[in-house]
Amino acid sequence: MEVKIRKLSDEELKELGVDSWPTWEKGVSEFDWYYDTNEDFYVLEGEVEVRTEDGKIYKFGEGDFVTFPKGVRCTWKVLKPIRKRYRLY
Image (cartoon, rainbow, N blue to C red; front, side, top):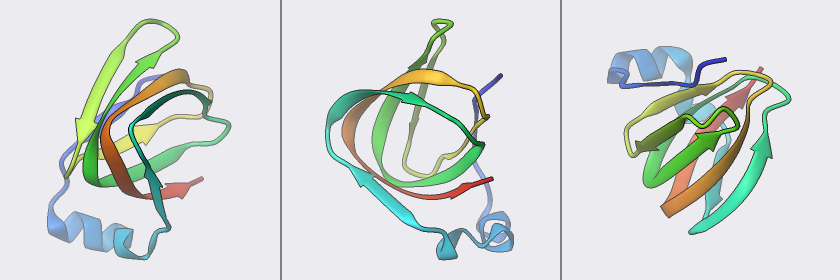
């Protein structure tokens, strides 16, 4: 189960309808999380470091498009307040 972080063009974001996805915000904090579904999100602002239970560390921030697959257990460390648009599937 690999977390994917990539940059998408404005056209790709538009094709996915990212502007219509719900928004989620979180201040500087640290918390455990389990993905019981797949999630895609586009980071509007902020900076986060995520450590998965297998010890991998992922860093992402403004402008990144991130995919977390179902089944991932991790710890989120929000370094700068995050605001993202997301979809669950």
